[in-house]
Length: 313
Image (cartoon, rainbow, N blue to C red; front, side, top):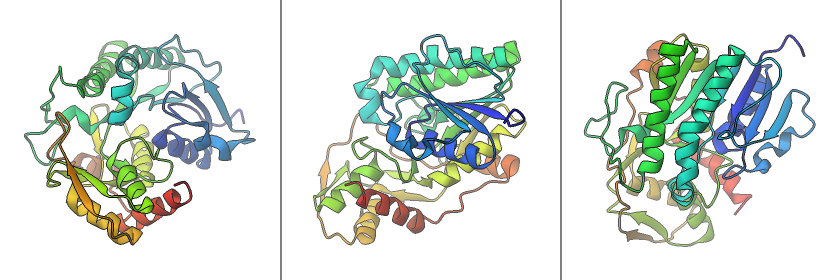
């Protein structure tokens, strides 16, 4: 396999990281998957047992990062990504977005590898611009409870651009909006697994706030396709990756009821601090630079996701 390209995927045992690993292997790359398993799980990689092109390394990227051999690309997906996780692991989230990202950038610099950072729509905070373009600087509360994630990602973008400008590392930044699909954790607190699990169990669906806040949902195969294309594009500033189809949380709950076939009631709870009221990507940049836009219709993606959850609830 000496002639194959070789990628290091940080956070490979996570939701998106594991799907990204599958995509790279399917397209002929060797993959070294790195994960601390704080929020990731080896169940997401169990199907790769015995795959000769895949190697797993359990490691904390906040420690000095060493991966021997040729490296062509490093993709950093190593961070808690749901409120439940980053509020439970606040210091780890801050460290992985700062120390961890710099360690990954240093490895890319030593190896002469291309580097891609998975950033997030959370850098826009509770946005005053709608839809959100990459040129928008955001509206983030720097001392609120969500800041451990939001500001870690904003810093991660800053240091990634600094390594590009001053250390000449070949970098990419993907700002990922709500992504859903198989392998999401049932208990990660995000709206898709929370609503689907409650509906499948016949429990009331818990809506935080009045349900009028909006989200945009992108199926995971579309998200990782955009990541693949961005890695191979010669563009260094952030690119939004998400589905511009916007719906209210209430409408999403009703869709889950319809697709699950559940008549469970909807109950309301107070909205968490700094929870965004609106969220929708402007994907003009992704369309123009990558020739990409989401291809999986919402109902199709949700049916696949619900089927996966049926097997795990």
